[in-house]
Length: 141
Length: 391
Image 1: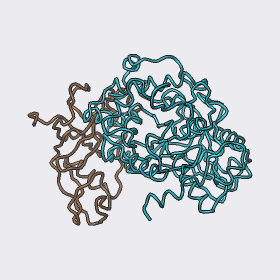
Image 2: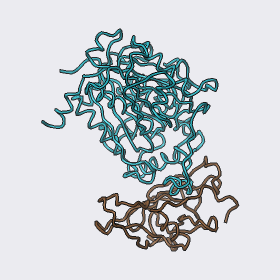
Image 3: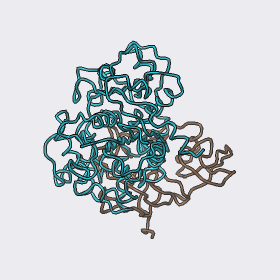
Image 4: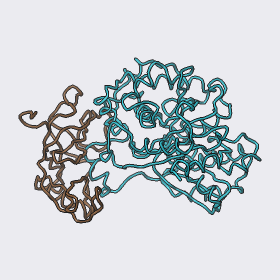
């Protein structure tokens, strides 16, 4: 998709299933079997209750913009030239994650907190796929 | 015994007896980070009327071990604390030093800071592995240094409370007015709200002049017991209340993007220990890496309600002559900001309480608050200190 893939994640044991699912364009989330709560980023222990009995569940890939910034002074080596939109997305299932918003103008007038978004998979290398997000098709509510 | 009365037993037991900065600050490519530590330590000890050989505890935070500072100074301390929770670490060290001194483990505690933040001379690497959580889940999406993280909080604060860019700019302008009274401040030209708003956007909604300086600087403070402090040459600045807290590290893990939870936790402790009211504070030194930080800090520490911080700092209320003198050295925005600014809140509070501040002196300053930031609103540390121990 781009010439320079930029900083790339290297999985650790507790995050590897997330990144492997991402390569299949599936967003999966860790859920605690003891308390039922989901969390993100993935850990080997539930940050809500401390239990180590975790399972992976599929996420819908949908959420809303919790907050965002338009980055004008970018990071060296980052593949998208500034300005670009960096956002915290609150997933439909509850956890929040940091992401890049794509397919939207990098303009505070074009992005809105609460805006419905959906995952837009970016295959940045043959090994690494990133969950970027884009405005939900059909606009949502 | 209640928590407050338990904490109250610590009030006034130790004092800051020396405070100083490195010989110079600004852009110093001819000095290493450790040289800045050493200059500050030597100056603070001289200020205290003490020598390096009197120091038996070293507290230091950087991207290195606390013991490396001790080695550079030729010290063999019996107590070393390298707690690193971000730029407020040195304020947290005051609490740790108080604990060590009151427990009878140490006599003289030296807290030092030196950072070649601009010139990067003698600084360790800052690169995290690509399997660190921040490089897995934040960097690949475009997190580009501190301004981007703080912009995420500022945008949410504006969304929830209607805080405006003009209000953020007002804070920068009031802080600059203090800097104009401080000959050591690096940014002393007059500044207007319009100039802040027309400076280029770094990470919307933050402009260049919403962001702190990046400098080379150092500072140090010396603490000992209140009893010993009375035998030393300088007027003691008593530690009345302390608090520290940490809630997260990664930006995405911030529990509430419009409220600084760690600051509420640390300041509640400090006020409970000190037994003073907000109205008793004569001078405030609030960590200001970005204009949004003291605004959210004032809300979380209870000087105003959530959402009122923008109005609180407007109309020159924190400027010289205003009702709430804040960041009287010119702050990280206009005085200096090495990267871990917390030390400079301590040095300025001590100077204000000693009445050493010349044109920028707050009249009759008796009680000061230092409130520091760590990471991305990740941690906070609070110190309330004063010239006397309240009855």
